[in-house]
Length: 159
Image (cartoon, rainbow, N blue to C red; front, side, top):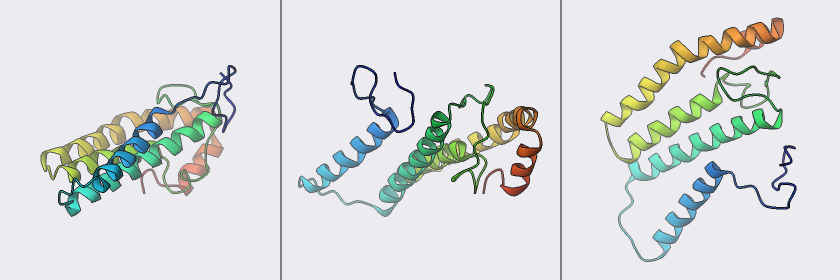
């Protein structure tokens, strides 16, 4: 496959499908069709708010991951990075992929109006913040030295 940024086909001319974007597009399209098809159930504010959070988190995570792919650097938290990505959304948070996942998890909790499901983003945050990110930061400091230290001083870990 051709790995250049923005290319949506492989060497054979087949279209590459990006599953997160496909899922989001299908979700939105079928929701619109459902609402336009006369299946008018009351849409509660929490349902819409939850879906918007899930969409926003998915968009943030997917875009941030695509930036890594475009620069041919690893998304694996335990991998060896080849580049330090410091463009938006990495200008307002050092961890937009993780932030996106937290927003997705919170969106599902809101959608289902489930206090128990609010535990998922809290637990995810605590584990990522206390276990995974410190290891990533050590790797980045080792790989990029002063450039990473400067970036770390300028941009917050979360928001």
